[in-house]
Image (tube, rainbow, N blue to C red; front, side, top):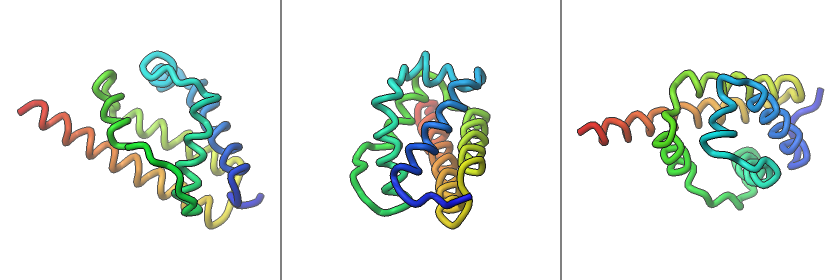
Length: 129
């Protein structure tokens, strides 16, 4: 099995990952009912994000924190949802790739999930006060 080496590999990864998310009823509603993503438009954005994260290519300019805080205002993004997200992400990586970049992307996904949960919790606490 090869490592993640280019954007074509990232497209394969992100496509497989979203198929898993959309098949899982415990999380799919976030993407189909709350956010109502158009996958054909969303995939290139995600590939750009992960390409920047793994290959330092640049090009991703969206405010990832604000995006997730806005979603969580509509439908609270629970720690359980992040656990499901990570499970599917890691499975998509492990089923398709192996190597340094594969481990790096899983570590970055864990960091991202952790940071988003912290920021969501801080945002919720500030709203409570």
